[in-house]
Length: 92
Image 1 (tube, helix red, strand yellow):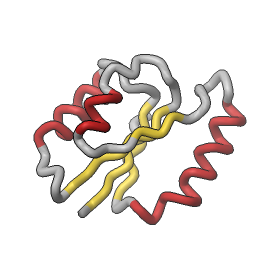
Image 2 (cartoon, one colour):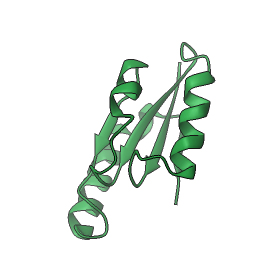
Image 3 (cartoon, one colour):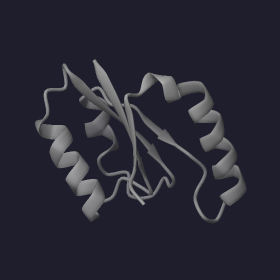
């Protein structure tokens, strides 16, 4: 199975979030699985849906208000998990 990590600001209803979720709802999740690394706890409306489809959601400290903590956690996460992913898509 291919795992893809999507890095987003939050899980709201914005353009990038809507697009990624539309793709995620319609792909063959037995072959491709999406995980999400988000930079804010706000707007987590689709968190439960992602988890019900097999995706993992990791919430980093808020950006930019906790810039240094966010950077450190992102660095730590990627050192531990980067090899799990075939692709990392940063929506910025």
